[in-house]
Length: 453
Image (cartoon, rainbow, N blue to C red):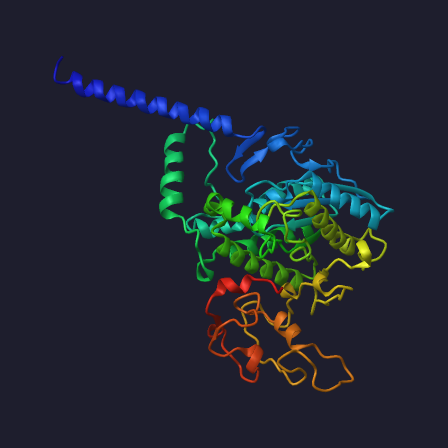
């Protein structure tokens, strides 16, 4: 054997080994690729019409539910957008059933184009493609958790090209992509324990939601926003144990549980601010669904019972904003006579008290008199003591201290729970001095995402 033949033989063996590994990687990825998944540079992936990915039958548009094409100006067509929590036939059925009960004179068609792993940016891109073809009456955004991928992987752009591989693409090595994702990105570069100062997602969420609103208004559709529901905090040991067991698997996408709760609370505030500023209907889903294993399958995905409540709350918000409803302020009719919490934007959003106070979530209702980045100049507490009890009667009803704090745009949202340690001056308690925004800080911001008991 010549001196040149040995290096050439070694190189040939190396190339053949890499080719075998690459071929095996493509076979593995192809076997795990869901049926009907097509790859798109702007959307990362899309779903083929009439396919059945993840066991859900899709229509002629690659979505779930009624086919909204061609557009029918005389019908109440509702397009649902979001992530995997919107990828549900039970959710679509619940919205359709509720709308037919609330708006019986309208022809109702409901379709969900939510996709697993879709962020707000991808929903905006998809809606731009479908808007002119479908021209729905209303478009609903139920999202908030998938955008945390921008915080877990802080180097990502708006298109989160991570964790999904096109095995048909000959220009990219699937083996090197898997190696980089599972070893480098997830284990070395990811930041699953991100904090408040690390959040990039609220700005991306804000821009994407405003883009959807602009597109909807351009085609004459009514945008409807919604807060996002999480299963925590929960007193259900079965659900809590399930979430704890799933955390190591999902922290590469949503982050650790404490970070996820923090980010979603901030996202809900962003959604509420946009709804108030733009005068949009806001479905108060957060807090409306019981946090137990009968309604939640994990930290955010819902069971059929949970999807039923989600669909009812969303449908009531659509009916309240739809021009085809019997009244522009159609009142929701839910079980037992309770009113579904819906916020109408424009000026100070009214707080509609239900027969059970827990149905009204004040944490996401913010006034438009102060901007989202501006601290309140003054909070007066003359009409209430530290427990929120009025000291003296007034001819005009005044809000309690708790209501004023709940509707104040704090830097850390929601407002601190009772007993939270505050550094600096707390305007909710001392309320006679103007406090710069930078001085209102909470020692443990993660505790602030805990809803009231």
